Image (cartoon, rainbow, N blue to C red; front, side, top):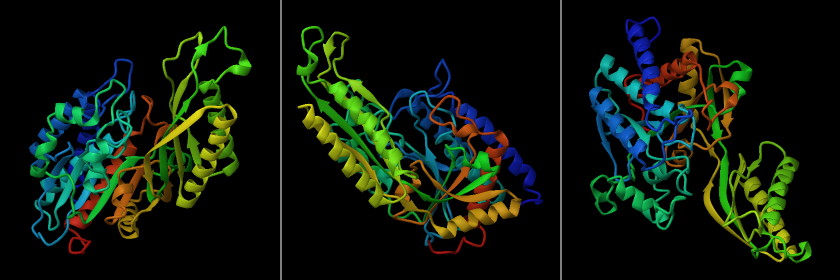
Length: 427
């Protein structure tokens, strides 16, 4: 669309996108900087409701599904063609940045708004989605939004899961106005999606380092997320000799150090992270009796992840046995590595060539909603640069020009599948 009369309007929508991204960041803005927008909390609900208002103002049909995903639909003229879906997630980590997830939601909304304003109804239905959750920040379960849409998750997986304040996931869901007994009115699971495109900040420094404007994602790494609980015996810090202690924290510290050592020995692209460690009922004058920590393992090869996990847990057990402690592990996520669709990816590269944008093919080291769609429909991802690779942090930043480049790339690809040469293609 470069050089077309619509070019000026496209630029205007790009500027509107930047303003809307700042606007969305006000929902859950932290006084000290950053954004906290957790699943089913008040800032999250207000943001989703406000997005519905914005979608409707652009002429999109917008509504919630049963669990809180929000859709904006640009209805196509040919019902035999499966819809193309685009979007990302609205939730954040605690004190996170304003681009992760949010950029994909806002860019998708503005893309559909622009296409409707310029070209009217498409041949193929185009939809955008603001997934209710992806991060796993409030409850120990990730991809609650896209997991329901793809059928990977159901309400049963949320039963019994609670946040740090003791509120269960299903309680929080009902408090936010989503009645689990009325789900059949707007079921979350869908079987009609033809393809999925997600635009996202890279959350790494590769594009910035290589001075590229667009990353065309080839595959998303697999990941396992677990909780490890080490149980010893709490006892008096002054009267319990060192040789008689059943110190859960000392054991956990040994396990954390071992995790780093083994991951370094395995080498790239494997990464293993202990992101949270909690001493239960810990005080300064008591030998810790129970410690819980998280474990996150990622690799592009499923077998490598499983082998590393098995060896690591085996070594954890050895540490526990040697120290006469108990250990328990609970798996919360086991996401397979997923290759992105070569056909849609080729359209992303064609869009970059059309505009003259510098681009490279690259894997994603972070998990994304596209990972869940990959096994059920053609899926692809567009990356834009992240300054210094910083993400999940108030200092998360992408240059406005880079955000607009990604937006225009997304618009071009959606145009092809809704109105252009790919509009008649059976997905």
